[in-house]
Length: 165
Image (cartoon, rainbow, N blue to C red):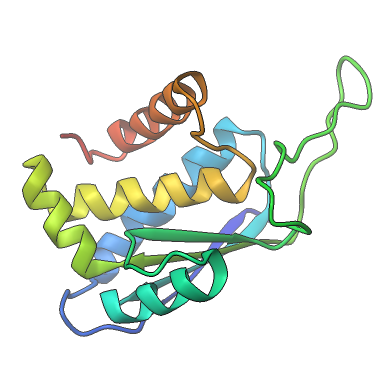
C-alpha cells in the first residue's frame, strides 16, 4: 500500500487537469516518503473563495477567505498537533496509517497569490497542497524556526516535481 490522494473539484473558475493531479500525487508521495509515512490517504478539495470563507469562519472563527485549510483526522483539540510520530525506541517509530485528513484549497486565492508571487498557478496550488499536507501531520509555522523547517520541506518536494518559482 502507499499514500493515496482522493480529490474533488467543487469550483469552476480553474481547470484542474489529470496531468496536474498526477503531479500532486507525486508531490504527496515524495512528502510522505520524506516523513517516513508509508501509507495513508489524503482528501483534497478545490473550492471557491466563498466556500473557504465559510469554512474558515465556521472552524477557525476567522471571517475572511484564506488560501488553504487542513483538517487532520487525528486532531482532538483546538490546539495545533504535535508531529504524529512517537518514538518507541532509538530505532523505531510508530507509523501512521489510514486517513490523514482533508485539505481544502481556494483556487481563487491561488490565482491571486500566483500573480503576486510571479510564478505559475500550478506552482502555487502545489505549494498550498504540500503546505496543507505538512499541517495534517503536525507541522506548523508559529515562529521563525518552525516556518523555516516547513519552507525547506515544501521547497524540496516542489523542486523534485518541477514546480519551481
